[in-house]
Image 1 (tube, rainbow, N blue to C red):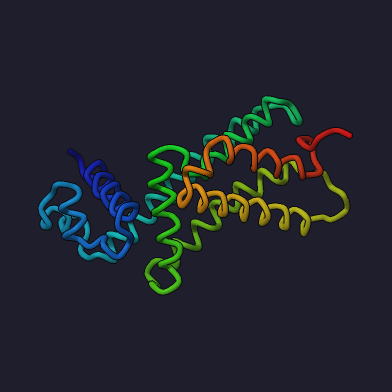
Image 2: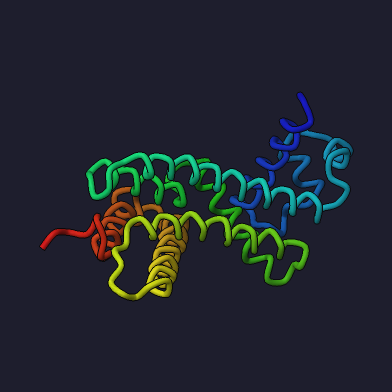
Length: 205
């Protein structure tokens, strides 16, 4: 196994530990056990727990942003206001949510790392990058969906933050209450949010 694949295997072990037992348990020894490796093998790639966690956070961010960027291409390629665009937007927004095993692991890790960054300075830079990267995608989306009603840039910023808050809330609810916040419920909430936008996807009156 090459170095990149081994690092990814270790990152995946970190995410599984976070999802099952929390970030505090993600030590070098625990991660090695979860990955089925010797501690020395993990230390070959990461000199400390801080280095391991910072790299894992960055990897999760990269994975989420890659999914979002791929989904955004579908939005860009569709006609404004069409059912195809609506479907592409819902697909894009769904990439934020824990709707399958991989996205659930990533969402758990994402939230845990962002929360830990408040008191662990070595995670702060990655927390800032993660917010900016996701906000950029949401900002692009909102710019294409919201009609100009004279509110200018501030209106777009407000709508982007409103959508980000909705996605954060849905992610938390879907992780904590998966029996209630199902795929169908998430889609209903997102549909309702899109309907409230004064743009090409808003309902016609």
